Image (cartoon, rainbow, N blue to C red):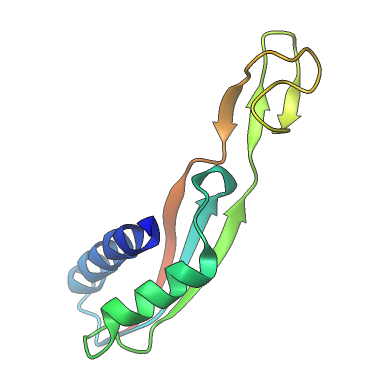
Length: 110
């Protein structure tokens, strides 16, 4: 379950943000995750809650938005990923978006 490792990384980032901003409490964390990461949002939320239980982040809400996969191909195709081949010519396209994981926003109480 790679969601646990990702949740650990998110928690580390959020703790840094909270510390830098002298936060009393973290209320909400917004994360954007590319669909090609194959992260299960429910498992990520479960891992996040387990890691933050009885810590300074206990009760923080994790909100997850998906980043759609976008590809480009040498044939000129630019658009949604349709498997691992270009839907226009059948060759492997270059992935432009969909592998990212970002902590987009942290809502804190100071």
